Length: 249
Image 1 (cartoon, helix red, strand yellow):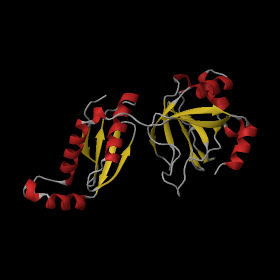
Image 2 (image 1 turned 180 degrees about the vertical axis):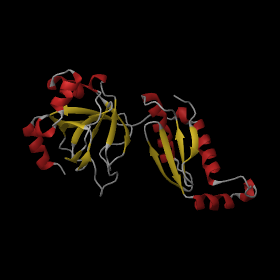
Image 3 (image 1 turned 120 degrees about the horizontal axis):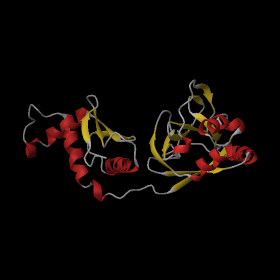
């Protein structure tokens, strides 16, 4: 884990702050701390901050940055030939990072996700069990006994990448992705577990399905889960899944 991130340009209107290359809880804690600091104290011209496993991408409006620098010229002097929006944003991030250690973590709440494992809702459960040298019941027990951190949202709106999978359940993606994966499907891939928020193609190994909705385009925030939250899966039966699905919106 790097205490200070490497800050580099990401095109002409964004920078990326990288805290390391390995996926681990401490690295991601610093990712969340910087993301939270930017969310609470955005700089003038900032458009968006996007957290990922080991980095935070910060998008900005270059013209807004120039306009601010022109306004500040009476204090800071005329704009020098070496100055640029990238350098201004990098300096802002470096100053923000000074107080990062004092920022307490948030989102320590645990979100329970009901899951109906196996059968038509988890068509890869038995294959995963065979690959892992376990029974399907053991796969379910191990998966449901863990807690998982939301490292990032991506791939599709509201899709959570969840870390913390037991090494016994580390399986690769399917050799051939499915053209259709049902909304709510819970999958395993590469030491991660995730939930499909919408019907889509996909290559994760499907072991169950939740009746909960994860994406709400007409709400704020639009996603059920947020980066930094902890998820725990709760096994439910087929009848509960069907009944829950009738009332879920």
